[in-house]
Amino acid sequence: MTTEARPRVGGAWISLLSVANLGLWMGYFGPLQVLLPEQVSWFAADGEETLALAIVTGFGALVAAVTGPIAGALSDVTTSRTGRRHPWIMAGALVGGVGLVLLASQASVLGLTVAWCITQAGLNAMQAGLTAVVPDRTPVLQRGIVSGWVGLTQSVGVVAGVLVVTLAADEAQGYLLIAVLVLATAAPFVLFTTDPPLIVAAPPRFRLRFSRDHDFRWAFATRFLVQLGNAMATLYLLFFLRDRIGYGDPENGLAIVVVVYTVATVATVVVGGWISDRSGRRKPSVILSGYVMAAGALILAFWPAWPGALTAAVVLGLGFGVYLSVDQALITQVLPSADDRARDLGVINIANSAPQVLGPALAFPLVNWLGGYPSLYVAVAAVTILGSVLVTRIKAVR
Image 1 (cartoon, rainbow, N blue to C red):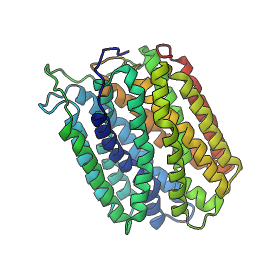
Image 2: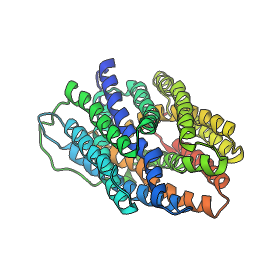
Image 3: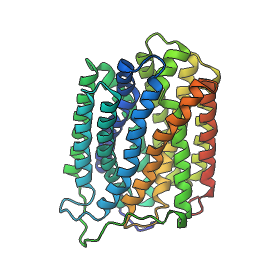
Image 4: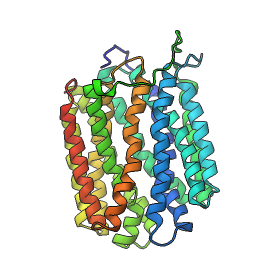
Protein backbone atom coordinates (compact mmCIF):
# COMPACT_ATOMS: atom_id res chain seq x y z
CA MET A 1 0.00 0.00 0.00
CA THR A 2 1.29 3.45 -0.90
CA THR A 3 1.57 5.93 1.95
CA GLU A 4 4.04 8.59 0.79
CA ALA A 5 3.18 12.20 1.66
CA ARG A 6 2.05 14.69 -0.96
CA PRO A 7 1.23 18.42 -0.75
CA ARG A 8 -2.39 19.35 -1.32
CA VAL A 9 -3.40 20.18 -4.88
CA GLY A 10 -5.28 23.35 -5.78
CA GLY A 11 -8.61 24.01 -7.39
CA ALA A 12 -7.14 24.85 -10.80
CA TRP A 13 -5.36 21.50 -11.01
CA ILE A 14 -8.51 19.62 -9.97
CA SER A 15 -10.56 21.57 -12.52
CA LEU A 16 -8.22 20.80 -15.42
CA LEU A 17 -8.03 17.14 -14.43
CA SER A 18 -11.83 16.99 -14.25
CA VAL A 19 -12.22 18.58 -17.68
CA ALA A 20 -9.81 16.04 -19.20
CA ASN A 21 -11.76 13.20 -17.59
CA LEU A 22 -15.00 14.70 -18.87
CA GLY A 23 -13.73 14.39 -22.45
CA LEU A 24 -12.59 10.82 -21.78
CA TRP A 25 -16.04 9.73 -20.56
CA MET A 26 -17.78 11.51 -23.42
CA GLY A 27 -15.57 9.47 -25.73
CA TYR A 28 -16.71 6.28 -24.06
CA PHE A 29 -20.40 6.92 -23.48
CA GLY A 30 -21.50 8.96 -26.50
CA PRO A 31 -20.89 5.92 -28.74
CA LEU A 32 -21.93 3.29 -26.17
CA GLN A 33 -25.24 4.84 -25.18
CA VAL A 34 -26.49 6.12 -28.54
CA LEU A 35 -24.30 5.92 -31.63
CA LEU A 36 -23.30 2.24 -31.61
CA PRO A 37 -26.86 0.99 -30.90
CA GLU A 38 -28.19 3.25 -33.67
CA GLN A 39 -25.61 2.06 -36.21
CA VAL A 40 -26.23 -1.57 -35.32
CA SER A 41 -29.94 -1.10 -35.92
CA TRP A 42 -29.20 -0.01 -39.52
CA PHE A 43 -28.00 -3.37 -40.71
CA ALA A 44 -28.88 -5.94 -38.03
CA ALA A 45 -32.09 -7.91 -38.56
CA ASP A 46 -34.95 -7.42 -36.12
CA GLY A 47 -34.16 -9.22 -32.88
CA GLU A 48 -30.43 -9.43 -33.63
CA GLU A 49 -29.44 -5.93 -32.50
CA THR A 50 -28.48 -7.09 -29.01
CA LEU A 51 -26.16 -9.80 -30.33
CA ALA A 52 -24.49 -7.45 -32.84
CA LEU A 53 -23.98 -4.79 -30.17
CA ALA A 54 -22.55 -7.41 -27.82
CA ILE A 55 -19.98 -8.42 -30.46
CA VAL A 56 -18.84 -4.84 -31.07
CA THR A 57 -18.61 -3.83 -27.42
CA GLY A 58 -17.19 -7.19 -26.36
CA PHE A 59 -14.17 -7.02 -28.64
CA GLY A 60 -13.65 -3.39 -27.72
CA ALA A 61 -13.62 -4.30 -24.05
CA LEU A 62 -11.05 -7.04 -24.68
CA VAL A 63 -8.76 -4.47 -26.30
CA ALA A 64 -9.33 -2.15 -23.35
CA ALA A 65 -8.42 -4.90 -20.87
CA VAL A 66 -5.06 -5.38 -22.60
CA THR A 67 -4.26 -1.75 -23.39
CA GLY A 68 -4.79 -0.31 -19.91
CA PRO A 69 -2.14 -2.31 -18.01
CA ILE A 70 0.37 -2.16 -20.88
CA ALA A 71 0.04 1.60 -21.31
CA GLY A 72 0.22 2.01 -17.54
CA ALA A 73 3.38 -0.08 -17.22
CA LEU A 74 5.04 1.90 -20.01
CA SER A 75 3.87 5.17 -18.45
CA ASP A 76 5.52 4.20 -15.14
CA VAL A 77 8.94 4.09 -16.83
CA THR A 78 8.54 6.87 -19.43
CA THR A 79 11.46 9.32 -19.23
CA SER A 80 10.15 12.05 -21.53
CA ARG A 81 11.05 15.62 -20.57
CA THR A 82 7.32 16.37 -20.59
CA GLY A 83 6.75 13.82 -17.85
CA ARG A 84 5.55 10.24 -17.39
CA ARG A 85 1.80 10.74 -17.75
CA HIS A 86 1.32 13.67 -20.13
CA PRO A 87 2.64 11.91 -23.27
CA TRP A 88 0.25 9.01 -22.76
CA ILE A 89 -2.70 11.28 -22.06
CA MET A 90 -2.23 13.24 -25.28
CA ALA A 91 -1.25 10.30 -27.48
CA GLY A 92 -4.22 8.34 -26.18
CA ALA A 93 -6.56 11.23 -26.94
CA LEU A 94 -5.20 11.42 -30.51
CA VAL A 95 -5.59 7.69 -31.17
CA GLY A 96 -9.04 7.69 -29.58
CA GLY A 97 -10.02 10.63 -31.78
CA VAL A 98 -8.88 8.77 -34.90
CA GLY A 99 -10.95 5.76 -33.90
CA LEU A 100 -14.04 7.93 -33.39
CA VAL A 101 -13.60 9.51 -36.82
CA LEU A 102 -13.32 6.04 -38.37
CA LEU A 103 -16.52 4.93 -36.62
CA ALA A 104 -18.44 7.64 -38.44
CA SER A 105 -18.18 5.84 -41.79
CA GLN A 106 -18.76 2.21 -40.79
CA ALA A 107 -21.78 0.19 -41.94
CA SER A 108 -20.99 -3.37 -40.84
CA VAL A 109 -20.37 -5.26 -37.63
CA LEU A 110 -16.75 -5.91 -38.68
CA GLY A 111 -16.08 -2.24 -39.48
CA LEU A 112 -17.67 -1.06 -36.24
CA THR A 113 -15.69 -3.62 -34.24
CA VAL A 114 -12.31 -2.63 -35.71
CA ALA A 115 -12.93 1.11 -35.34
CA TRP A 116 -14.29 0.71 -31.80
CA CYS A 117 -11.21 -1.34 -30.85
CA ILE A 118 -8.97 1.50 -32.06
CA THR A 119 -11.05 3.97 -30.06
CA GLN A 120 -10.83 1.82 -26.94
CA ALA A 121 -7.06 1.43 -27.29
CA GLY A 122 -6.57 5.19 -27.44
CA LEU A 123 -9.01 6.11 -24.68
CA ASN A 124 -7.62 3.47 -22.32
CA ALA A 125 -4.06 4.73 -22.84
CA MET A 126 -5.36 8.21 -22.03
CA GLN A 127 -7.15 6.87 -18.95
CA ALA A 128 -3.98 5.12 -17.75
CA GLY A 129 -2.27 8.49 -17.51
CA LEU A 130 -5.22 10.36 -16.02
CA THR A 131 -5.86 7.85 -13.24
CA ALA A 132 -2.19 7.65 -12.23
CA VAL A 133 -1.81 11.41 -11.69
CA VAL A 134 -4.22 11.29 -8.73
CA PRO A 135 -1.98 9.16 -6.46
CA ASP A 136 1.07 10.83 -8.08
CA ARG A 137 0.02 14.27 -6.90
CA THR A 138 -2.63 14.13 -4.15
CA PRO A 139 -2.30 13.23 -0.45
CA VAL A 140 -4.40 10.37 0.91
CA LEU A 141 -6.73 12.62 2.89
CA GLN A 142 -7.56 14.69 -0.21
CA ARG A 143 -8.22 11.77 -2.53
CA GLY A 144 -11.87 11.43 -1.61
CA ILE A 145 -12.73 14.97 -2.70
CA VAL A 146 -10.51 14.75 -5.80
CA SER A 147 -12.00 11.39 -6.72
CA GLY A 148 -15.44 12.89 -6.13
CA TRP A 149 -14.86 15.65 -8.68
CA VAL A 150 -13.29 13.21 -11.13
CA GLY A 151 -16.12 10.76 -10.53
CA LEU A 152 -18.61 13.53 -11.21
CA THR A 153 -17.20 13.86 -14.70
CA GLN A 154 -18.15 10.26 -15.45
CA SER A 155 -21.82 11.00 -14.87
CA VAL A 156 -21.69 14.41 -16.53
CA GLY A 157 -19.80 12.78 -19.40
CA VAL A 158 -22.71 10.39 -19.96
CA VAL A 159 -25.15 13.29 -20.19
CA ALA A 160 -22.86 15.49 -22.26
CA GLY A 161 -21.98 12.65 -24.61
CA VAL A 162 -25.63 11.66 -25.09
CA LEU A 163 -26.73 15.27 -25.60
CA VAL A 164 -23.97 16.03 -28.10
CA VAL A 165 -24.70 13.01 -30.28
CA THR A 166 -28.47 13.40 -29.93
CA LEU A 167 -28.37 17.05 -31.02
CA ALA A 168 -25.95 16.35 -33.88
CA ALA A 169 -27.36 16.37 -37.42
CA ASP A 170 -26.51 12.69 -37.89
CA GLU A 171 -24.38 9.88 -36.46
CA ALA A 172 -21.29 10.89 -38.46
CA GLN A 173 -21.39 14.43 -37.11
CA GLY A 174 -21.92 13.05 -33.60
CA TYR A 175 -18.72 11.00 -33.82
CA LEU A 176 -16.73 13.95 -35.19
CA LEU A 177 -17.93 16.26 -32.42
CA ILE A 178 -17.00 13.72 -29.74
CA ALA A 179 -13.54 13.27 -31.29
CA VAL A 180 -12.92 17.03 -31.21
CA LEU A 181 -14.09 17.27 -27.60
CA VAL A 182 -11.81 14.43 -26.45
CA LEU A 183 -8.79 16.30 -27.82
CA ALA A 184 -9.94 19.75 -26.70
CA THR A 185 -10.45 18.65 -23.09
CA ALA A 186 -7.17 16.72 -22.80
CA ALA A 187 -4.96 19.50 -24.17
CA PRO A 188 -5.40 22.07 -21.33
CA PHE A 189 -4.40 19.57 -18.65
CA VAL A 190 -1.29 18.55 -20.59
CA LEU A 191 -0.34 22.14 -21.42
CA PHE A 192 -1.03 23.88 -18.11
CA THR A 193 -0.11 21.37 -15.39
CA THR A 194 3.28 20.00 -14.40
CA ASP A 195 4.28 16.36 -14.70
CA PRO A 196 7.70 15.77 -13.10
CA PRO A 197 9.83 13.58 -15.39
CA LEU A 198 11.27 10.27 -14.29
CA ILE A 199 15.01 10.74 -13.82
CA VAL A 200 16.21 7.14 -13.70
CA ALA A 201 15.25 4.90 -16.61
CA ALA A 202 14.02 1.38 -15.80
CA PRO A 203 12.51 -1.48 -17.79
CA PRO A 204 8.72 -1.74 -17.60
CA ARG A 205 7.34 -4.32 -15.17
CA PHE A 206 4.34 -6.00 -16.74
CA ARG A 207 3.99 -8.79 -14.21
CA LEU A 208 1.75 -8.24 -11.19
CA ARG A 209 1.80 -10.83 -8.40
CA PHE A 210 -1.95 -10.58 -8.06
CA SER A 211 -2.35 -13.51 -5.69
CA ARG A 212 0.03 -11.98 -3.11
CA ASP A 213 -1.74 -8.62 -2.79
CA HIS A 214 -4.76 -9.42 -0.64
CA ASP A 215 -6.34 -5.98 -0.46
CA PHE A 216 -5.64 -5.17 -4.10
CA ARG A 217 -7.30 -8.43 -5.13
CA TRP A 218 -10.48 -7.71 -3.18
CA ALA A 219 -10.60 -4.12 -4.41
CA PHE A 220 -10.47 -5.49 -7.96
CA ALA A 221 -13.29 -7.95 -7.21
CA THR A 222 -15.45 -5.21 -5.69
CA ARG A 223 -15.09 -2.90 -8.67
CA PHE A 224 -15.49 -5.74 -11.19
CA LEU A 225 -18.83 -6.89 -9.79
CA VAL A 226 -20.28 -3.40 -9.33
CA GLN A 227 -19.23 -2.44 -12.87
CA LEU A 228 -20.59 -5.74 -14.17
CA GLY A 229 -23.97 -4.84 -12.72
CA ASN A 230 -23.69 -1.37 -14.25
CA ALA A 231 -22.79 -2.80 -17.69
CA MET A 232 -25.67 -5.27 -17.61
CA ALA A 233 -28.09 -2.51 -16.60
CA THR A 234 -27.11 0.20 -19.07
CA LEU A 235 -26.04 -1.55 -22.27
CA TYR A 236 -29.61 -2.40 -23.33
CA LEU A 237 -31.31 0.62 -21.78
CA LEU A 238 -32.27 2.05 -25.18
CA PHE A 239 -33.85 -1.26 -26.14
CA PHE A 240 -35.54 -1.51 -22.71
CA LEU A 241 -37.26 1.84 -23.21
CA ARG A 242 -38.31 0.87 -26.71
CA ASP A 243 -39.36 -2.77 -26.29
CA ARG A 244 -40.36 -3.19 -22.64
CA ILE A 245 -41.74 0.23 -21.72
CA GLY A 246 -42.87 1.12 -25.24
CA TYR A 247 -41.69 4.71 -25.00
CA GLY A 248 -42.60 6.52 -28.21
CA ASP A 249 -39.23 8.22 -28.77
CA PRO A 250 -36.68 5.95 -27.04
CA GLU A 251 -33.67 8.12 -27.94
CA ASN A 252 -35.25 11.17 -26.36
CA GLY A 253 -36.38 9.04 -23.44
CA LEU A 254 -32.84 7.80 -22.93
CA ALA A 255 -31.57 11.39 -22.85
CA ILE A 256 -34.15 12.30 -20.19
CA VAL A 257 -33.30 9.27 -18.06
CA VAL A 258 -29.59 10.03 -18.29
CA VAL A 259 -30.10 13.67 -17.26
CA VAL A 260 -32.20 12.63 -14.24
CA TYR A 261 -29.59 10.02 -13.31
CA THR A 262 -26.79 12.56 -13.54
CA VAL A 263 -28.55 15.18 -11.43
CA ALA A 264 -29.01 12.55 -8.72
CA THR A 265 -25.36 11.53 -9.00
CA VAL A 266 -24.21 15.13 -8.67
CA ALA A 267 -26.15 15.35 -5.41
CA THR A 268 -23.93 12.74 -3.74
CA VAL A 269 -20.65 12.32 -5.62
CA VAL A 270 -18.65 15.26 -4.27
CA VAL A 271 -20.16 15.31 -0.79
CA GLY A 272 -19.62 11.55 -0.52
CA GLY A 273 -15.91 12.00 -1.17
CA TRP A 274 -15.70 14.91 1.29
CA ILE A 275 -17.37 12.88 4.04
CA SER A 276 -15.05 9.91 3.49
CA ASP A 277 -12.01 12.23 3.68
CA ARG A 278 -13.24 13.78 6.92
CA SER A 279 -14.08 10.47 8.55
CA GLY A 280 -11.20 8.48 7.06
CA ARG A 281 -13.69 5.64 6.39
CA ARG A 282 -14.28 4.33 2.85
CA LYS A 283 -15.89 0.89 3.20
CA PRO A 284 -19.25 1.85 4.76
CA SER A 285 -19.96 4.21 1.86
CA VAL A 286 -19.17 1.53 -0.72
CA ILE A 287 -21.52 -0.94 1.01
CA LEU A 288 -24.34 1.59 1.27
CA SER A 289 -23.98 2.61 -2.37
CA GLY A 290 -24.28 -1.02 -3.48
CA TYR A 291 -27.58 -1.53 -1.67
CA VAL A 292 -28.99 1.72 -3.05
CA MET A 293 -28.02 0.81 -6.63
CA ALA A 294 -29.54 -2.63 -6.19
CA ALA A 295 -32.81 -1.00 -5.13
CA GLY A 296 -32.78 1.04 -8.34
CA ALA A 297 -32.29 -2.11 -10.43
CA LEU A 298 -35.24 -3.81 -8.68
CA ILE A 299 -37.45 -0.83 -9.53
CA LEU A 300 -36.66 -1.42 -13.22
CA ALA A 301 -37.41 -5.13 -12.79
CA PHE A 302 -40.81 -4.77 -11.16
CA TRP A 303 -42.06 -1.36 -12.36
CA PRO A 304 -41.50 -1.39 -16.15
CA ALA A 305 -43.18 1.95 -16.83
CA TRP A 306 -41.94 5.44 -17.62
CA PRO A 307 -42.43 6.73 -14.02
CA GLY A 308 -40.57 3.63 -12.80
CA ALA A 309 -37.66 4.34 -15.14
CA LEU A 310 -37.38 7.91 -13.84
CA THR A 311 -37.58 6.77 -10.22
CA ALA A 312 -34.93 4.12 -10.84
CA ALA A 313 -32.70 6.77 -12.46
CA VAL A 314 -32.86 8.86 -9.27
CA VAL A 315 -32.10 5.92 -6.97
CA LEU A 316 -29.30 4.56 -9.16
CA GLY A 317 -27.78 8.02 -9.45
CA LEU A 318 -27.74 8.62 -5.70
CA GLY A 319 -26.03 5.28 -5.09
CA PHE A 320 -23.56 5.52 -7.94
CA GLY A 321 -22.53 9.02 -6.90
CA VAL A 322 -21.37 7.78 -3.51
CA TYR A 323 -19.69 4.77 -5.10
CA LEU A 324 -17.75 6.86 -7.63
CA SER A 325 -16.36 9.26 -5.05
CA VAL A 326 -15.23 6.65 -2.55
CA ASP A 327 -14.18 3.63 -4.64
CA GLN A 328 -11.38 5.36 -6.55
CA ALA A 329 -9.98 6.90 -3.37
CA LEU A 330 -10.06 3.48 -1.69
CA ILE A 331 -8.22 1.85 -4.58
CA THR A 332 -5.39 4.38 -4.50
CA GLN A 333 -4.78 3.32 -0.89
CA VAL A 334 -4.32 -0.38 -1.71
CA LEU A 335 -1.91 -0.10 -4.66
CA PRO A 336 0.94 -2.59 -4.11
CA SER A 337 3.76 -0.28 -5.24
CA ALA A 338 4.25 3.46 -5.76
CA ASP A 339 6.69 2.73 -8.61
CA ASP A 340 4.11 0.78 -10.62
CA ARG A 341 0.93 2.66 -9.82
CA ALA A 342 -0.11 3.32 -13.45
CA ARG A 343 0.33 -0.36 -14.28
CA ASP A 344 -1.66 -1.38 -11.21
CA LEU A 345 -4.39 1.14 -11.95
CA GLY A 346 -4.44 -0.22 -15.50
CA VAL A 347 -5.09 -3.65 -14.03
CA ILE A 348 -7.84 -2.19 -11.86
CA ASN A 349 -9.34 -0.59 -14.95
CA ILE A 350 -9.80 -4.10 -16.36
CA ALA A 351 -12.56 -4.25 -13.76
CA ASN A 352 -14.21 -1.45 -15.77
CA SER A 353 -13.62 -2.91 -19.24
CA ALA A 354 -13.96 -6.68 -18.69
CA PRO A 355 -17.60 -6.32 -17.59
CA GLN A 356 -18.27 -4.84 -21.04
CA VAL A 357 -17.38 -8.32 -22.36
CA LEU A 358 -19.07 -10.42 -19.70
CA GLY A 359 -22.06 -8.11 -19.26
CA PRO A 360 -23.48 -8.67 -22.77
CA ALA A 361 -22.73 -12.39 -22.52
CA LEU A 362 -24.85 -12.58 -19.36
CA ALA A 363 -27.51 -10.06 -20.36
CA PHE A 364 -28.23 -11.50 -23.81
CA PRO A 365 -29.56 -14.92 -22.63
CA LEU A 366 -31.41 -13.30 -19.71
CA VAL A 367 -33.25 -10.90 -22.00
CA ASN A 368 -33.91 -13.35 -24.84
CA TRP A 369 -34.45 -16.73 -23.15
CA LEU A 370 -34.50 -16.54 -19.34
CA GLY A 371 -37.31 -14.22 -18.36
CA GLY A 372 -36.57 -10.99 -20.20
CA TYR A 373 -35.80 -7.64 -18.63
CA PRO A 374 -37.17 -8.50 -15.15
CA SER A 375 -34.63 -11.33 -14.88
CA LEU A 376 -31.90 -9.04 -16.15
CA TYR A 377 -32.46 -6.36 -13.52
CA VAL A 378 -32.90 -8.84 -10.65
CA ALA A 379 -29.50 -10.28 -11.65
CA VAL A 380 -28.09 -6.73 -11.72
CA ALA A 381 -29.27 -6.16 -8.15
CA ALA A 382 -27.72 -9.42 -6.91
CA VAL A 383 -24.36 -8.79 -8.60
CA THR A 384 -24.17 -5.21 -7.31
CA ILE A 385 -24.89 -6.21 -3.71
CA LEU A 386 -22.29 -8.97 -3.84
CA GLY A 387 -19.68 -6.57 -5.19
CA SER A 388 -20.26 -3.92 -2.56
CA VAL A 389 -20.24 -6.40 0.33
CA LEU A 390 -16.89 -7.88 -0.74
CA VAL A 391 -15.24 -4.58 0.19
CA THR A 392 -15.37 -5.81 3.80
CA ARG A 393 -12.54 -8.23 2.92
CA ILE A 394 -10.12 -5.32 2.47
CA LYS A 395 -8.03 -4.97 5.63
CA ALA A 396 -5.83 -1.90 5.17
CA VAL A 397 -8.66 0.60 4.66
CA ARG A 398 -11.47 1.36 7.09
